[in-house]
Length: 526
Image (cartoon, rainbow, N blue to C red; front, side, top):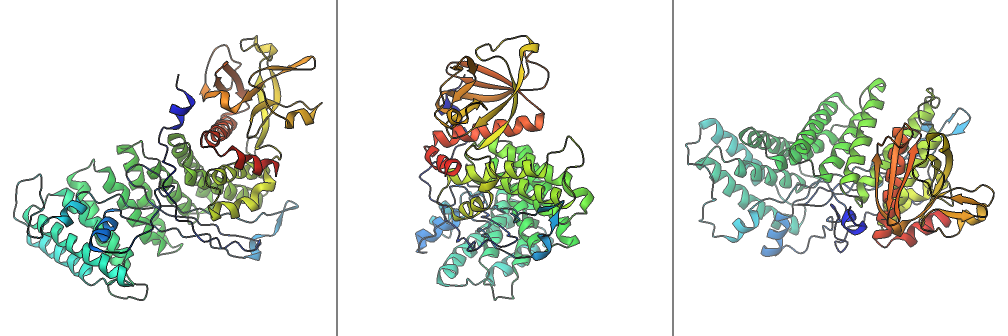
């Protein structure tokens, strides 16, 4: 049984890493807002731009520029852009549509270029080492190399720092081109050369017409394709290839060509996850690509793709409980699903989640992201829009089937469907006869309230939270909250409801373990 600390540290990101905060553009409450957030890519361990996104690039001296080149970017945050569009705010079913939160495209920062820094520090006459025997390069390969080098040579940065950085990238490209000329099957050189092309694309001056950013990204994609053909297990290449494809798709708006590119990107993210399942960054970016795709495909396909995106964000969070960007993205995709459901007349199937419930779920994730990163303006702005959708003064309120308090193992007939509330202090059975006591402190286990026992769990007492299946439980979606006092078993109304409870309890615990409970308390209590 893992302790709270050990469980939390799985995939956690060091707090000391600073984040480059986007400028919030939410000055007023428009009828519809388009909240796009940061797009960063993973470094070796963290999120696609959670904490390792401190990309404050220092002055480009030779050494600093080399370090910058080694810490390759991908998408810089496309911050919350707001659009007012009265056409989407019409009433539906007598309800006024809420401001729309669109995806937080957070995406993509390419993985660090392997060996680049050491190569740049080495003598320019040294050769790049290759694990393969030397081979002659075909004429076609030489032409392709020349075309790639011409593109890189023609890039000029937008400012002095960009020009200095591009000199380093150009030097690195020559080294990789030389390695490929000696051995056309050097997949490491192909992969790193693709990274140089991808980084050079981001260094293209906005007013430049030659070369185009798209041409550089297209050439990078060809290098990734070749590298993965030579080494099908190169998961970093599949990941960064997907980022390059996504960048190309964004240039094409909501066109058929963009749709095909987004589909390619999702396939590459899927391959990257297959090869490296323990990557919350790839899962998060996969979810973002699916969100983009869902905005282009026909309406009949949209809901399936959106639900798949939800599963990817949720999987990313399960790998890294404090991955605030994936948490926020999950909130925005649920918000969008609520908007779509509301526009189409609400939930038609009794088993479908209502728009109000979806809004409430969305608010939980956005509140949690804000609690983990309270100074991040994008989250603060979004929270102002969704806070009223929470069941204040609680984070979550809902029904769970529970045994009699103090009797974890009881006949199924004794289990009752009861209302529970969750806030920054813990989970407890709601007592409608005394709401004031509910709002006060929670105790660690089942306690007596007058003559009636109630189930109460304090956050510091939680050891783990998981789904469970046991013959001693009534049929349904079992939930086990393992505490220092022993396990507490509950049953959710559905498997979808179970996911919501698991996430909410884990997030409350993660926020507590990160020392941010006071922030969450301020959100729910005002």
